[in-house]
Length: 424
Image (spheres, rainbow, N blue to C red):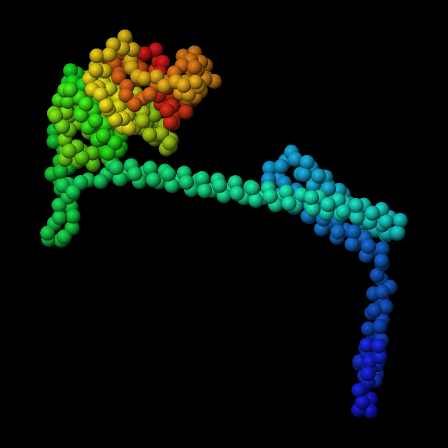
């Protein structure tokens, strides 16, 4: 600024003298700025700039190609053409970047092939990404839906298990109102000890009676079995039902049958698994596995292999599942001639359904020697057992032997087939 007038910029730029003033210090600063700009201009190498650009582009596209290769692996496309293309391209970009030396001297002839190769690789990378982007997006969506479906399935399984447990507890542990009384003093409800008092049971081991055993934790289900059998019996006073349950359900079942005694002179005996002292880890491989951490095994499902020990005075017994509804008099079964065999039951074979091969591990030589893969299993709903023949053939000991020698799937119906042909 001179003479109090503003100086207009020329061509949109302000000269150094106008910007810093007319003094000596302003001129010195302007000279320093000019020298710095000139120094940077002299040191900038256009070939090096182009080389740096090639390196940056190669590195950026290498990261992009690596990302799509990772997507392909996540989508389990290890053997696909897409994954091979992206991995080959990533290797090319990596090789190109390694050939660029920032400290080495460069010339036009050396840079030109690198630029051409980089452009070709970048063009190929963009083409591959463009072609496969939609496919990857679709595959990722499919994979996400599968993951969501799996998670929902796991939630459903947990809900089903919780529902089964809740139903079992509800069916086995709710006493009726007569088992309760209200204290007028404090207004609280108490269990009546008289209801839970267990009277000395009569002798229910008379082998001349018709004996039935039911292993269950479900009060409602066992009531249906017992009442339907009594309703269709011609001589109900000769029928004895032995109900065996887990310890936590025994008291509730005792209350149930105390308040609702079976009709027409039939008898029901409720016993807890814990009352059978011989069922310990020393004697039973099943108990040993359960105590060793096999939480998937339920002892109640394996008690059928210990019937002679549980009822030492009986000669015959009929095993009933808790989902059976009896429609005829079961006394007729006691006249069946088993011809010295251990049990009588109804076969259930339809094609490959319920054959031994579905339950027994025939890779073990002992299983191949003793069992036949095509042999039929049977329905365990109603079974007649000759306990004398069982004791004679020592079937429980053979069961223990196979438990120790043969690795079998002890779940679902696997317990059934162990019984099938133990030379009994």
